[in-house]
Amino acid sequence: MRLKNKTAIITGAAGFIGKTTAEIFRREGANVVLTDRDLDLLQRETKHFADEQTLCLQADVTSVEDTKQVVRSAEEKFGGIDIFFANAGIEGVSNPISDYSLDVHDQVMDINVKGIVIGLQSILPAMRDGGSIIMTSSIAGLIGSPVNISYSASKHAVIGLRRSAAIPAGERAIRVNSIHPGFVDSPMLNRLMEQRGDIDVVREQFVQKTKLGRLIQVEEIAEVVAFLASDASRAITDQAIVVDGGVSQ
Ligand SMILES: NC(=O)c1ccc[n+]([C@@H]2O[C@H](COP(=O)([O-])OP(=O)(O)OC[C@H]3O[C@@H](n4cnc5c(N)ncnc54)[C@H](O)[C@@H]3O)[C@@H](O)[C@H]2O)c1
Image 1 (tube, rainbow, N blue to C red):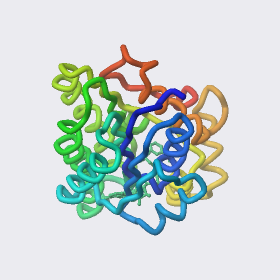
Image 2 (cartoon, rainbow, N blue to C red; image 1 turned 45 degrees about the horizontal axis):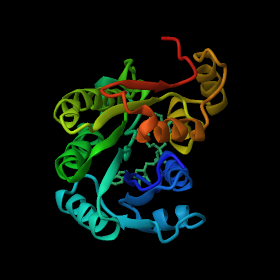
Image 3 (cartoon, helix red, strand yellow; image 1 turned 45 degrees about the vertical axis):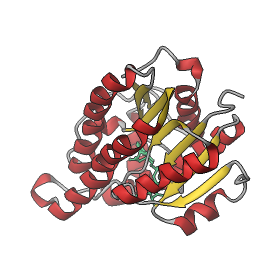
Image 4 (cartoon, rainbow, N blue to C red; image 1 turned 60 degrees about the horizontal axis):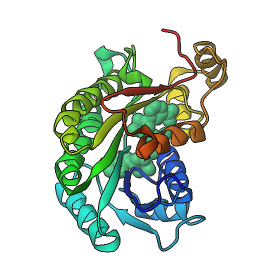
């Protein structure tokens, strides 16, 4: 069990990537503190594996108070924090720059960027030395998008946060990496494809962009996150780990 005696906080844990990663973390022996702004959804989506080593909490990543409470609860129940999977995120809308809503832009930046800053401010100081932080970016954090401009900007910003956080974290042997999923067969991708036209046509266009000729399965993301969380990746920090089946730009 690669994560035995470790405690992990996962944000956006009710979502597709978060809940799958939480299940793998549990299987690998970690205590998991699962947080989401939607507690009902979180409890429903995780009830098939939730046990006494699982704590589900309502928390909005944009709230300093919620995040501090998550830290207090994690320390109280499990005695410390080793892993922080900063994963909560929203996609916003698909619109060209000229029509892009500034309100949506603010929401995307608040959750996808400020949410991680708040997490770093509250969770990093509370982590045990030798821990691991994994931030969910995207391939949209490495390439531009004609219609998901705020999403792309927010996921590029995650790289800046990773680079900056990795410096002080490294002094305590805490590693900070970003994961960049490609086209994951997921509700979020479905929502994005629906906004771009005929979903089957758009899916095929995405598939054609990959060298492996297929979408990525969520377990393929979660397994890499588990590797980054474990001591097997102890020499890896400040890296962008791309899991996209080889997307050609
Ligand atoms: N699905 C994909 O194809 C894909 C690809 C690349 C990157 N990503 C990234 O992976 C992460 C997870 O995506 P997913 O596919 O699981 O999405 P999802 O929509 O299934 O899950 C996101 C979760 O985040 C939660 N959330 C949203 N705003 C929140 C807030 N303010 N505070 C707390 N929780 C909040 C939602 O309630 C939801 O449960 C996101 O950061 C996303 O941008 C996803």
